[in-house]
Amino acid sequence: MKVIVASDPSNLPKLVSAAKSLSPEVIEAVSTDRVSVPVDKLVVADLTLNDCWTSALSEREFDLMLLPSTRDFKEIGARVAARKRISYLSDAQELELSGQLVISRMVFSGRGIEKLKVPLPAVITVDLDAFEPISEGGDPLAVEELKVDCSPRINLLERREREAEVDLSKAEIIVSVGRGLKKKEDLEMIRELASLLGAEIACTRPISADFKWLPEERHVGMTGVRVKPRIYLALGISGQIQHVVGFRDAETVISVNTDPDAPISEVSDYFVVADLYEVVPRLIEEIRKKKGS
Ligand SMILES: Cc1cc2nc3c(=O)[nH]c(=O)nc-3n(C[C@H](O)[C@H](O)[C@H](O)COP(=O)(O)OP(=O)(O)OC[C@H]3O[C@@H](n4cnc5c(N)ncnc54)[C@H](O)[C@@H]3O)c2cc1C
Image (cartoon, rainbow, N blue to C red; front, side, top):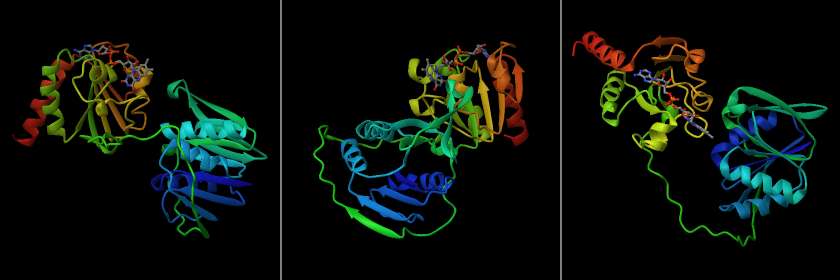
């Protein structure tokens, strides 16, 4: 079996690890720069636009193509599969090969897992959070520089990196607020608590998208950031699945909610039925006392 993995250089080590789990005869990598990964061949091409990636990848022969589950590669993967008239699936979290290829992926925003039998050849995008980068070192056995003659129909006018204020995915402690917070000014006490705990502040989608009290990059969940802190302190958050899916890898979840039946109770290690407006000031006071400040 020949597997092609294709992505920008930073994601290749995880894709190669996913490919190796299937023990194929040949692994070929396609990327935009030289990368030190143990594959049979590395193809380096100057590919920037989705149109060009699609053309370059559609030319190649393979049994299985693995791409990262990013917005762009999901589009590229679907287009390659359509051009070649082969199967396409997105967001694989596990790949198994025993006679045939079976993939597992989350459904219903993480409430369930489905297993699907996929006929080869196929293009599959892989959830990179589910794979560790390849541990085995080594360079490609061969490198090919590919000239791509691509005249894209869609042209890039400008690409600017957004200046992110914070990378929540690396935060150790997170204090997260939901609609239990009554007004923007009350974020002050949340900031104070977060500062005393050395924590980052996060929120549910309504707080950033609807109320605009915090920037979008601080909203956790299906359409926001996925976090895995040691402690996730959820204040006034109901625990809808679209939010919960974003912190399911947190080590310890502590939540404060006035509603004893709030769904967040089911995913919390400690569930405090209380008013956050009583709990937060008391927490601040207690931590201050402990710190002697
Ligand atoms: C397609 C789609 C994608 C979505 N993606 C996301 C996503 O990525 N992230 C996300 O967060 N949401 C997302 N949502 C929205 C999600 O479904 C919920 O609406 C949202 O998470 C609810 O936010 P909340 O918990 O802040 O508000 P609510 O559901 O209104 O909950 C507020 C909670 O605060 C409690 N409360 C009230 N007052 C107090 C108080 N004084 N002290 C303590 N507790 C109090 C209440 O009992 C309640 O449980 C998405 C929705 C859709 C349709």
